[in-house]
Image 1 (cartoon, rainbow, N blue to C red):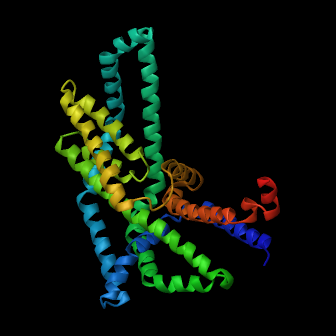
Image 2 (cartoon, rainbow, N blue to C red):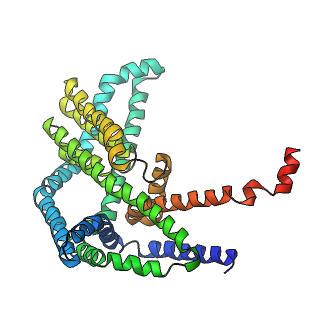
Length: 361
């Protein structure tokens, strides 16, 4: 097959895959979650199998433990988080109005004098900004909920996802061997090398980032709850769980928690400062300890590229797109680096010897 035919084949395959994601994105979520669980737990299953346990019993043991942890989470934490979420959504308009009034009262006259505008104009501008921010938060929460509600449903979480994870985890090695048998024989070594590089990039990020999100979520939630912040458990867990988006998790959590703290604690500003310090400490731990130790530079992606991939895939494919954004971006990054190496070693970059000699002369 000529190079042109190969390029056409892979472009058509990519287009079919993207079309499949777009058409079936509404029902793919529990299946993607099951694939993620199987991929995440496969090394543990391999370790148990190496210790002498049969693959079937290793799979059952791991999934039973995983489902048990989920059940305990839903029984112990979900009711508390659900109550806090309902109360937060109910009080959110009042919190916004109180925060707006507090900021206008404490800072309005100073900023108005410094900017050379009237306090009424400043208050109107602040009202517009706070209103737009509140609308953005409400739309974001609604979008996340509508996109993730299939995953949170009893059917998908406790039936479909574990079943998919069980069969994939049980047959993981056989599936890998089957896919390996379909690879083009002329390029087998090269494709296997790229696949190993992709696996290292995806596995390093997924397994490391899950640990980072859980640790940060626990730290934020416990710290804010100890400080007595209203909705502290909800804000902390939410900030930790979206920490896979660089700077967004900590930024959203900081804005929400400081806003709630201002309404709740003002004029006792040390409590507000303590709430802000929680996220400062969390960012220090994430940037200097957790990320370097647990994730590192496994994906090879710049944070800006990672953020663009998350938003782009989320825009195109919804919540499912956000789940596959990082693995897909890591794979694309591996292919892009491979293409760059091929280009740098090709005559297109180096030029012919005749042209090189002419340039030197």
